[in-house]
Length: 164
Image (cartoon, rainbow, N blue to C red; front, side, top):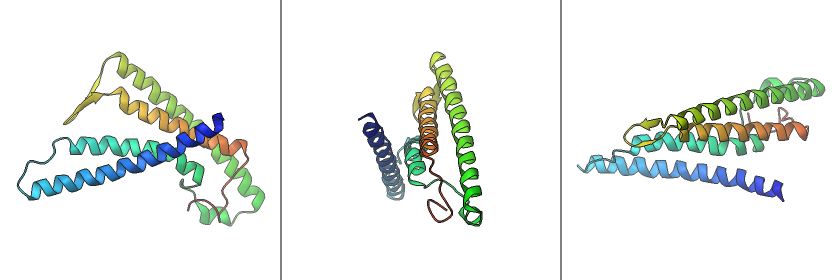
């Protein structure tokens, strides 16, 4: 039950991330149309686009890890013997879990510091700075969990599977 909820959350985040990219596209089109028709462009479109790009990246990244859409050097890996490919793949995933967990933890620490200091991120709009670090922490943490999930299942992408 918990596993299914988690799976749905990962898929839901990916869909939400994709929708935010669609909204960025609409916002850019609206901004260009307004400029070219002599109207005032949306002041906040640039800042909102930047926030949405961070969100969409962190929301979709765990799903991409799950689906094998992360960056892999498949041409080189495909030439390795099967056992070496498996061992190096597992070692790489251990390293990915460790690095992502540390980055997630550090983003959480910085976010908590920003929240305690009531720091604001001021652009054309103002939002609490901790929100940006929360997005990073959650996204990086979920990526670490997805790589850990691959490790537990002993799944390694070979040169012919997954992303290239």
